[in-house]
Length: 457
Image: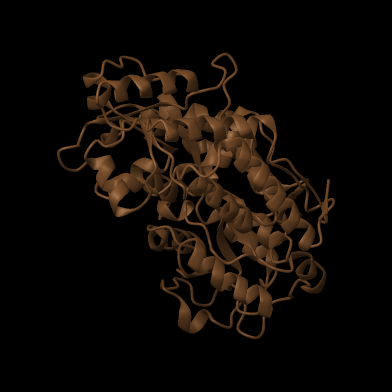
């Protein structure tokens, strides 16, 4: 499930502003879209109160069956009809087909935060602030709420997130005399050089297929790739992908790659996971969901068990730390929903009860964004088995999440990620340096944005 946070959907979204003008919100109810049409035969779960109105939901978390049962058992006034339409890309393809056809969408759909704007601009999602979403705003950090908002509009209910940190191999650090995890990127590079000089493994990895991670690291340095507000000026966008901060970060990782201090392996592949298991990488820069993903992929269960720990993400300026995020999903109400108020109630409450949230974090299915969990002693003080009993939530992930300020994503994230991925691959191949990649990316994305009808500032 967590792997989907890295997958770049290959198909570019064309004619964005045409869709904005030509795709009006659906009233729902007919033609096999949201509402009661598909409820009777296509629910994966069993309805508890069959006489109650139903809300259709597409969602992919591994524990959704339990979450849906928790909700349906607690509600007599509404029931959830759940289906898994695929995780990440496959679901987005199905949802895009339904949006284009103006029928066939569920009432509520799970989306990753960086894909919300892609569907907002097609009038596919409902501003749920009109149906009471702001009543639960205080349950989340400022960053978590910003990720699902556009101006004063709110387009989804946040569930889980991915505050970034540095996972590391304690055995590798000990063998090569690294007594303290690097607190800055300068220290990270120095430790990488030290390990390589001693004949050790790659210190980390510059995967070409992790553009979302690279964007986050650029933002940590001070970059602001996009300025965009769909709710205020949907045709205007500011694009700054070749600023000095972005060039600095791409040059930094490009230099590590060129010197052989980090690997060049695409992440989330069999070869990469094998490398993690066998100590081929000293560190893994990743998000709070990574322990669950790695455990599911077989990491930390064999001879590498008990050899991982986590530390805060290295900083450019240790005196002024910046927290950034990679991944995270939310539940959005679609404009094809039959009853948008009822669908909003489900979106806000489906994965918000104590039992579901507890099951989510204890099984490492999610890193919850709900402050009721983030402030609970059980969660904060939990000793994480993957990290050898380290209180990772208290030490690293909760402070990082609460310090996160939120990102602004473009309305063409899919295309942007694809082009950034191409540039990362070119950097690893030695075909271009980081600054050159930033310049090329700026030109590519501006050209694309203009071709889609945007006014580029």
